[in-house]
Length: 189
Image 1 (cartoon, rainbow, N blue to C red):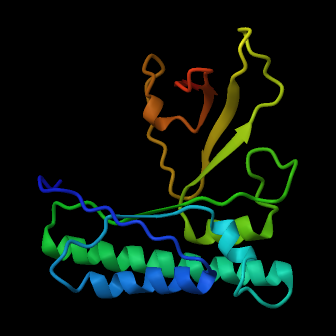
Image 2 (cartoon, rainbow, N blue to C red; image 1 turned 90 degrees about the horizontal axis):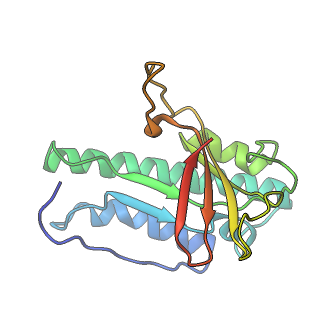
Image 3 (cartoon, rainbow, N blue to C red; image 1 turned 180 degrees about the vertical axis):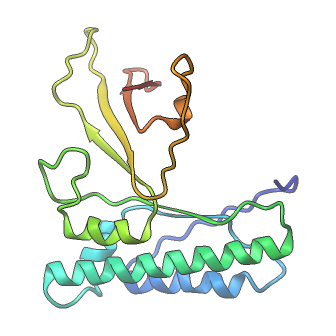
């Protein structure tokens, strides 16, 4: 871990083409003297797949766009990880976090029958799915949001634990309650 200041750069590309260009430019920026990024976050991936610059049949275009940006993110993270390792073996690899809100309703746990999710699952090792629990009635008079959080995918490893041992880091499902004061409470399911 670096003791120096952390540089955070925000970018707000307006289209899929702009996003692809921004991600591809990370290869170039890593060749300079500045430290390459160790985390890439893309919020609202679905907006880029359904927005301007996406052509062809809607479903086919979304799948193609998902594959294109996912492959570029995967390749860029691998390249940046190698660059980070060459500069200092103690640095962590570059990670990617991307959010995607499926339009497929009624599929609990982020059912992979959404064709775009199926494409994303090929590139991203772990999926975190948030499902709002509309059935849980609050125990208090004030409203609160309850969510189920699921982890799935090929990147999840499960180490055996003893029966008397409880390791929350190995859990795959949690219940998240957002209280009226906006505090959050996590419990394993």
